[in-house]
Image 1: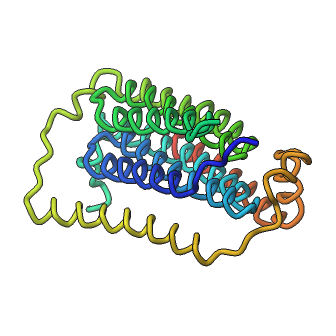
Image 2 (image 1 turned 135 degrees about the vertical axis):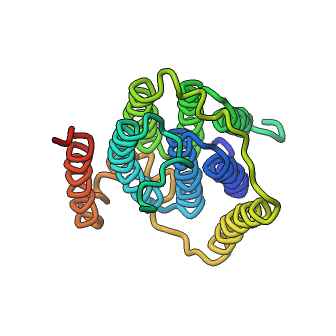
Length: 103
Length: 178
């Protein structure tokens, strides 16, 4: 029987990845890279779901990750459509210059 | 069997790949390079899911994230920012000290929330009724499917409606306005 991976290692890895994603989402200007950083943060949370589901012998973690993936797919479709529209209007996908809603 | 098992070594290698490739993802100037590093991150994450006995989610990760979502993102990068994708990063980040401090405080609070939340639930949670051996003998995908079409049937249907709304929203948004 192989030794199980301690859940705390996964929590630490998830925290590191989440913070990398958060820093990327804050500091980058390209809207698509910000979007990818948000996907990275979602993945870090998924890792917590999976590892705690494994640690507590529960399948709820896997089911919730399934729903998070569904929402991420929808978010990708709508978000990328918004980027295409933003590019048509502004000629670039720079998040700092996208201030159309300011009026 | 030594002090460190084979599984743990694989975990550490995959974790290293995840951290390095996500760091490279956030720091590369060219968005295409960022997207390619992101795909590597997702693959390494799928390896970690496999180590945590979540075979179905590992396959879904490779298919949905590394396959579908990243391909979509690559297409949009190539459509949108062929010539000015790299240049949109030229301006240096100009933040005053208060803004910097506020952002770093926000990141630290997020990190602490994640760690303490996980540790809190680690000490208070109850043990569920799906131990790894039983799930493996029945099949991981079968167990997840039984739960999705049984206990979680209503959220599953809501998720399908959400996907439909997303498709319609994407089509309406990207349609050329007259």
